[in-house]
Amino acid sequence: MKGTLYIVPTPVGNLEDITLRALKVLKEADLILAEDTRTSSILLQHYDIHVPLASHHKFNEHGTAEKFKEAVLAGKNVALVSDAGTPGISDPGFFLARSCAAEGIEVVTLPGATACIPALVSSGLPCDRFCFEGFLPQKKGRQTALEGLRDEQRTMVFYESPYRLVKTLQQFCEVFGPERQCSVAREISKIHEEHVRGSIAEVLEHFTAAEPRGEIVIVVAGAPQRPRGEHVNKFRKEERDGGEEQDKE
Image 1: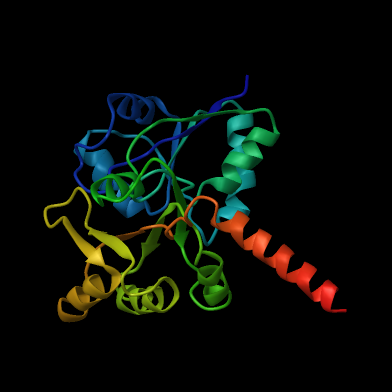
Image 2: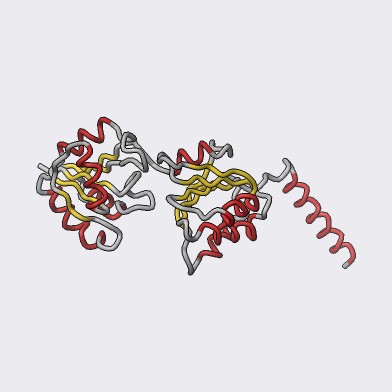
């Protein structure tokens, strides 16, 4: 009998932000895979969970995914957690989930905590349609990625390090314009949770004066939509101008 791979979200801040089902799965698992066993041990000790832990992080996941897949094939029920939030969302998890799914192993993902949704909903920006961009490339491809989002009309959600936040906001000013609205959520679900809203220029000014700390989520308004029919009128103008050029010939 094959086992099951469980993808288990863990709190992004407050340890009480975990579901009863998640606790049940963690307690009954044969093995828990953790991004950082030291971080996950704090959560497990808090809830009196005593299940063997193994390391599965971005530096070893290509190599360990096969090993842990074999454990599930052998009948082990394995639970995968990250340091905070839902595994696979800017965290390790994709390779193992893909490997297990390819073998016909049941992959069960529990609903639960993630930082992007609270940041989006609290931003005051439209959240009926949005795109999640996670961490932008740090160097190669970064400018290209930003340029590709210049005309994105949906609300955009980014993760960022506090050490790069000011530089990123400066780049957002250049690409999206200083007046584009945004919100920076910091330390979601923790004691010092903070949401700074305003234009990109205003938020940049705030964090230039006050050094950012903790986990950061940036929410940026989408590009303004063109007035209805504008693209049609533009096409007709180009068509008319083209016809006039032909007449001159």
